[in-house]
Image (cartoon, rainbow, N blue to C red; front, side):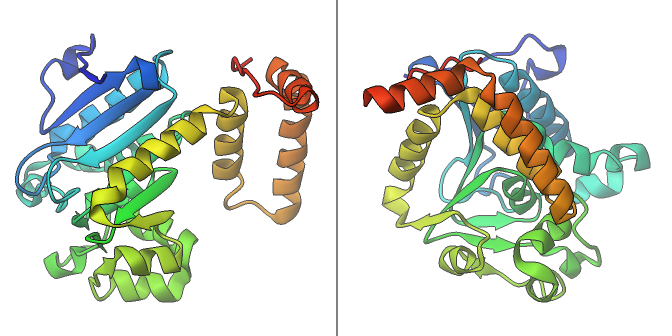
Length: 268
């Protein structure tokens, strides 16, 4: 069963608009945006979310992290007033904080439903998997404020869907449904709303069945080689493959395959 989690870090003694729970039996941590009704993400929450991802990354009880929103919506975006009040130095760190799911070595799943706007969309794009509900609407609406996405949204989106579709979404503040996001490769899966939690739980269990070492290696390799030349990416893949060949997990995987049994991976 999931239990509310408290952190030792002084800056995390009072979480601003979100909560964290850990279920050791499922090796799962849940970060739930929880500021009804639309789960607006404050400037302070961005700093705290980065620290939380770093803490959960170091927590041996956690294999997979799930980022979600309480209620009918993931998040309608950031605290608009906060942008005018924040210092230039603080604003310069926004993209670094929002990229915390990507830097985290463990798999991170975004569970999206309802509004997934602005920084809510940017946080989801920084995750490894985006499981959407049929109620999901993705949007980067900053043009309506005379602004552009500032935390990696347009850059990450362009990597996924290309410049033509990214211009369509960003320059028109266009809303993309969960089913369309699946067609365009933005969402990993799209499910009826009442089936979303079960789909996320199934993915958590699937990811737990693999070697933690191989998962960390695959995530870092894919992130690091995303903008590399093909020859460089192949070279990096080969180097990481060679390193994993020496791991206990790989030996266990091979032995389990030949013995026709389930492997027991230990992450070494």
